[in-house]
Length: 246
Image (cartoon, rainbow, N blue to C red; front, side, top):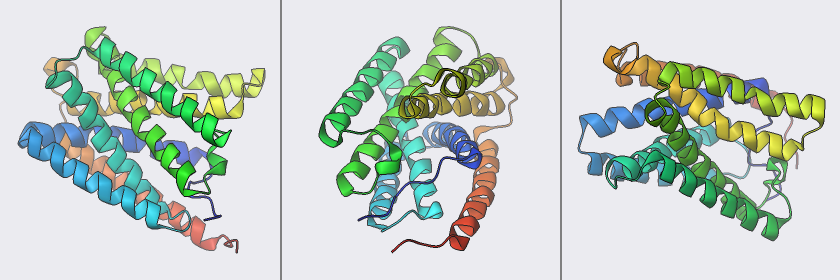
């Protein structure tokens, strides 16, 4: 495999990424709260595994396949983080710390093996495996951080979303004005997209008693899914117009 399996980093990439995090949050909540949680998690894992298998089977970046995998990582990563807290009773402070350590370990092993963490180098099966392992852990970590600020620290979902909207500007400013390493800036922003999107999605979906707009997790998930489909269609049209390398 010689072609990159991940998209170019553009403004549209970040928009779709934030939307997938929000959709993953509300979709996970909808299924876990309205169906047997064990069945929901098992089904989520099966679809997640199928989406990743499809992504690995591709020979190059296909927008629809790639973003389907991201959506399922978001859904299942949210379920994993929620199960850790709700079922196992692990406090958000502890789960945040654990997922942060796991992410650090993944980064360290990835760098020691491949000598790079750049997403522009995802041109082999092994690097792709490291990439998706990192993506999965960032979703779980972001979920724990978002719930930590919204519930444990009592900021609420809207205030948490605003905080993360400010935080995500830090790597962009540091990269532009203080020459922060591009790889560090990318992964910093990538991690923050999870609590950013999830906080605003929760704010729209949860009840007014919990500080939300009470639109419902189901309707919010469907609305976000519709927007994602349209934007991925735009990305697919752009990819179709671009010449493919040999």
